[in-house]
Image (cartoon, rainbow, N blue to C red; front, top):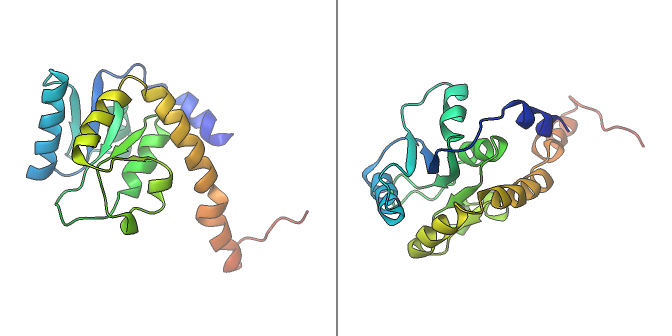
Length: 168
């Protein structure tokens, strides 16, 4: 498929970091990232891209990590970043999300891994870094099934008459 071919063209090599995060910095996010680095015993275990580089630079930076982390900026923030989840899966990296409001995490709670507690998040992160390829493969299969191009845009384009449904 086109997605597989695109991913094959973007061979980012072996990740240098266990975990990656991209997005704006906040005290809450930095606290979680620091705790995770401390649990690994390596302060350089986490790659952070917070300066909103170009799409290519962001992708290259995040591909240096085995697992991409979904962290809320503030406690009250409940939404899940579709951009972060989509991008991570398309560059070949699995996503691990901290606990979120389930009412605000659709459809990603059926695609990527969500922890039920913060202690669980840290434990799952440490396990996922060793099995990141398998975690990505499982998440990417769910992603392709649940969020296919037809579901994401095709149905809407057909509904407004821009695209015609192919006849059988």
